[in-house]
Image 1 (cartoon, rainbow, N blue to C red):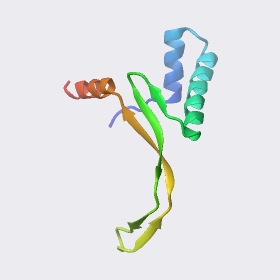
Image 2 (image 1 turned 45 degrees about the vertical axis):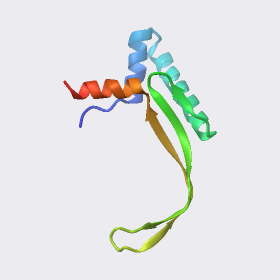
Image 3 (image 1 turned 180 degrees about the horizontal axis):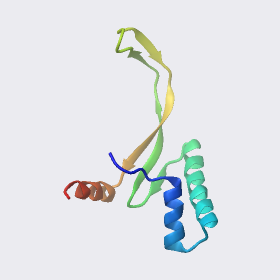
Length: 99
């Protein structure tokens, strides 16, 4: 598929573009990710303008089916993380597909 963007890549980009030290850049990235994670754990939406919205949804209990055996299996209610990209992000990704 391609390259994966990592925390290290993000902190390296902050180091190059902002001019903080490598340690300060890594701490900044970790701090931002921790703020986002903490907000999601609390059930808050995280909206990043021109990027997208992260939110937590509550899924109800339901009956699933084991695809191999056809046996019905109860699926417990749970919280799931969703991401909805902004229109700008969708347009940027679509434009990248036309290269």
